[in-house]
Length: 245
Length: 290
Image 1 (cartoon, helix red, strand yellow):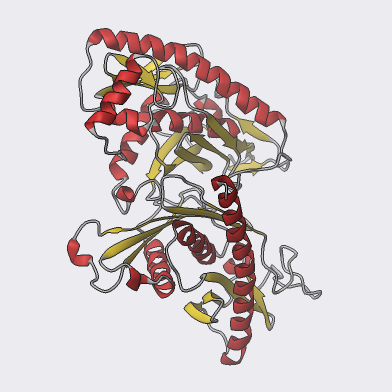
Image 2: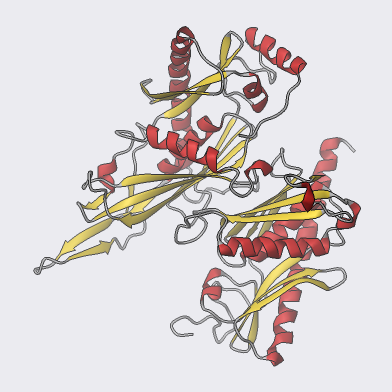
C-alpha cells in the first residue's frame, strides 16, 4: 500500500486508534414519533438512521405472505450527499439492493419471525454520512430500532467490520482504511450465543489469518453490544421516568 | 403524499375549531408550530441544515461541485434540486413510491429559485468554462404536515451555512488556464440568502385559512395556496395545490396573510441563523442525538 501507512510502527492507525479499538459510538432510540420504532447511530463520522414499521398486514400483493412466519422487508438507502462524491440516486442501485438483501438475511436470523405469521416487518435504513463501516452502522441502528418497536428478537445483532494490515487485524475500518483495498470482513454477531448472523469477506486473505481477523471482528462486535445495551437500558430508564413508574 | 384517515366527527371538530380561531393544538390561525433549526449537521457537505417543525423532519445537504456553465448563461453558476422522499417518512415511499412527490417539490423549488434570489454570478469561476454547481439535496425524514414551508426553511438555512472554497484562475503565457485552490481552508465564498424567499402554505379550512397545517388539518382542507414571500414581503411565486377549488376573493385574503406571516417568519429565521453563527465553530452539535 504505497503512500499511506495504515499502521505505524508504534501500532497506531491513521486516525490514532489502536488495532482493536472502535470509533466513538453514540446512539439514540426513539428519534421519530410516527414510526413504530426508530434509532440513530453515529460510529465516528458514519451516521445512520433506522426506522421500523410493523408487524403489520402485508402491503401490496397477498401472495408474498408467508404462512408460518413474518416477512422481513428491508430497504437500504444512502443520502445523495452522504459520500465524498455526490451520488445520483439514493437507492435502487446495485449496491443498495445488495445491502438491503444482507440486512434482510441478518434480521431474519435474529427476529422471532414465527411469532407473527402472515405479517410484514419493514426495516428502512438511511445512511446520512458514510465514512466506512456502513453495513455495521446500519445493522446496529436497525437493532436499536427493532428493539424500540418492541419486536421480539433472539438477541441483539451487533455488527462490526475488520481488516488485515501488516499481519495485524484492525477492527472497525474507516473509509481511508477501506479505500486502501486490503481484505475486509463484515460480521454480524448474536453476542449472547456467539452465533454468526452474517459473514462476508472480500479480497483475498490467507486461511491462517482468518481466525485472527474473525476474532478481532467478533471482539469488536461484543464491544458494540456493551455500548448498545447501555443505550437501551438508558432509554428504558428515561421512558419509565416519563411514564411515572 | 402521506396522509391520515379522519372520521367525519373529527373533521367537524377541527373545522369548527378553526372558525373560532382555535386549533386542535391550541394555536391561532396564523401561528406556526415550534421550529427547530440546526445548521452544519453533516460534515462532508459544503452546507447542511436540519429543520424540525412539529413532526415534520427535513435534512438538507448542499454540495458544491465544479462544472460548466449553461450555454444561455455563460457567466453564472446554477443550483440543482433533488428531493428524496425516503421510506423513513412513511412506508408508502418505499422503492419508487416517493418519486412523484419528490419531483413535485423539486419543481416548486426550481420555480422559486429562478432569478434574483441567489447571486448566481458569484458562482462563476471563468465564464463559459467553469462554474460552481450547487447540488441542494433535500431528505424527507418524517412527514407531519406543511412539507413545503419546512423544506424551504431548511434550504434557506443550508444555503446560509454553505461555504464554497475560493478558487483563482491563473493564465500562463501560452494561454492555458489553471485553477488554483486557496491554501487557507477558511477562505471561502458565502452566499447571501437575504433575497431567498420562504414558502407560506395557507390551508383553506371551512371559511377561514390557517398557516402551518398539521396532517390532520391538511386532511380537512379542500385546497391550499402556496405563496413564496421574500423578507420584504414581496410575493415571488404562487401556486394552488390540493384537490378542491378556491374562490378569487379568498385567494387575495390568503395572499395578504401570507405576506404578513412570511415577513415575521423571515425575521425570526434570520435572527436564529445569526445567533447560531455567533456561537462559532466550537459549538456543541446536537444533530439527531438531542
